[in-house]
Image (cartoon, rainbow, N blue to C red; front, side, top):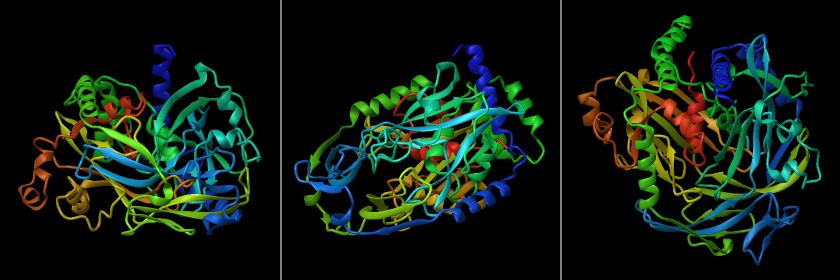
Length: 491
C-alpha cells in the first residue's frame, strides 16, 4: 500500500474509532440484539470422561491426547527449563495447536465511516454463551472442513483477499502459558460490494466495539486482538489538538491522554531502537528449553479419566466436555478444554512523562512463547491467585488492587478464548497515576516509588503509539497486552 493510501486508511480507522453509533444502533440496541441471539440458540456443554470423548484418544506413541484425524489440537505434556525467575524448571500440560488460523474482520464504509462485520458467536467455554466475534474465527482444521461440517461464513473473502483491500495483516501470538507457540493471522479486509448479512452478524463501528468493551463478557478475545493492532497514524501535535477540540463535548481527561499517546511519535522516553535493544538483550540473556513428556506421568500432575489437575489444585485443569450448539458449522462434538482454577488480573499502569502518557510494559517469559519473552501488561497474573499473593511478590500488583478509584479509568471482566478455555475470565484494568508521586502511597505499596524512579529491570516505559507499532511485527506484544490496548478509547 502506498504511503498516501496508507495514511487514508489510518484516518478511516481513527474516524471509525470516534463514531459511537452504528447505522442508528446505540449500545443498548446491540446489547438487546445479543440477548435475542442468546435466547434463540440452544446450547449444552457438560463434562464427561476422556474415555468417552468422540474421536479423541490418548495416543500411546505420542503420549498425548489427540484427535483421530491428527488435526485440530492436542494436549501434550512438556518439561520446561529456564534461567528466568524463581522457578528454573517444571512440567505441565499444554495445548499444542501448530496450525495458523484466521481471525478476520470484513469492513465496509457506510456514510463515510468504516464499519466492522461482527458475529454473535457461541463458544463452548464462554461464560455467557454469545459474544461479539470477528467476521471469521476459524482454525485451519475448521476452514478445511476436517470436521465434515459447513464452511465458515465469508471465508472466501479472506482466502481471496487482494493486497489493496487488505488493511491489516499480522501474525499474533496466543496465550503463552496455555498454548505451545500458537499464532493466528489477524486480518482486516475491505469490501465495497453489497453482501448478504447473515442472521447472527451485525455492522458496528470501531468506536462502538470499544464502547461495548466497557461491559463484562461482550466482546470476545479474538475481536480484541484484531482491533488492538489497528494503526491510527502519527500526526503533529497541533493536528491532534484539533481532533481533541472537535470532540471535546463529554470528553474526559484520560481520553485526551490516550489520544496524544496513540497518535504522536515524538516525546517518548525511549526510542524504538532502545526498546528493540532491551528486548534483544533479554532474549539473548534468558533461555527457554521445552521438551516433550508423557502427559500421564507429569511431575506434580494427576491424570484421571475425568480430569488432569495439579496435585495442589493450582493453575488449571484439563477437562473432557460434550458440546451441542445449534448454529455452528458442526452442531455437536466433544473435546478436551482447559479450565482455570481462579480468575486472573491484567493491568496497565500509566503516567504522563514529558507531557505524554506512557505505559509501564513488562517483558515476560511464558513457557509457550515463540521467542522467549514478549511485551506484557504492567501486571499479569493468570496462573496464580492474585487475591492471595503475598504483598510485594509481584511488582505493582498491590497498588493496582488498592488504587484510588479516581485513578482507575477502565475495569471490566473479559473472557479468554472460549474454544479451548472453559469459562476463563480475567479482570482487565487501566490505572493512570497522578503527575506527582504520593508520599503516603510510597510508604504503603512496595514498588510504588519505582513508577516515578527507575523501573525494575524487565520493565520499560512505552507510549501507546509505540506499543501499537510493535504489533506490526510477530511475537512482540502478548495477547493480554493487546486486549488492554483494544479497550483504549478516545471518546
